[in-house]
Length: 262
Image (tube, rainbow, N blue to C red):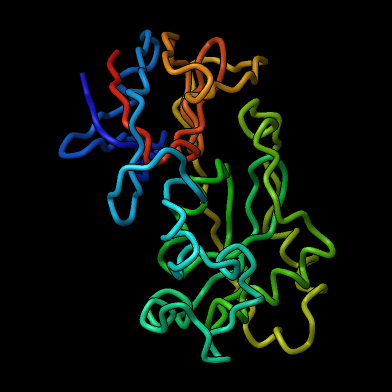
């Protein structure tokens, strides 16, 4: 039995990906639970993932309201990088900006529910791709900071999706793509100012996920409405546990105190 506050799934990057569920000082290796009935219970407590205060409602996946309106990692520019305002002197925490935003970022192509364009900090790309359930991915440009990467992403999003259809991703209704060939086409969409930043990687990343069976049932489990789950675990992909009767987005319930066993 494992008990603690949810913080999301972590990964070991092998094929298939190995998933871990950290709960306090403990960590469960979830691949070992495949094929078993998992018992999960929400214990009715929530905790801000930043300051640790007990709360009745979480904001922005795991924060209390005071933190969500004050932390740099919950600012609007995190989801809209092209609106970064560091250069205006209005960053919520310039130290955070120096460490996480004013550093090299990749713009990439990934195949999750189809081909999409996205961005991530350099050296954080594997975590980003696995969290999105990508089966293939390749960086196509390296930009000097997050704002610049966001501007290129917006330009490319006029030609490619920049969102993942999580239902298709979980069903596995995705075909592999000739990423190198597609990349050449995407290069033609680059505005002139971004062409000096393009990358010519010759290899792409591929990911295999621990899935025993495919599922057509994309019913979602909601711990607020159904605090107890007892279901057979048949797969893990992205931040989702895939059961026979439904799926649970672990990241969505960051800050919820649970007990879990198999």
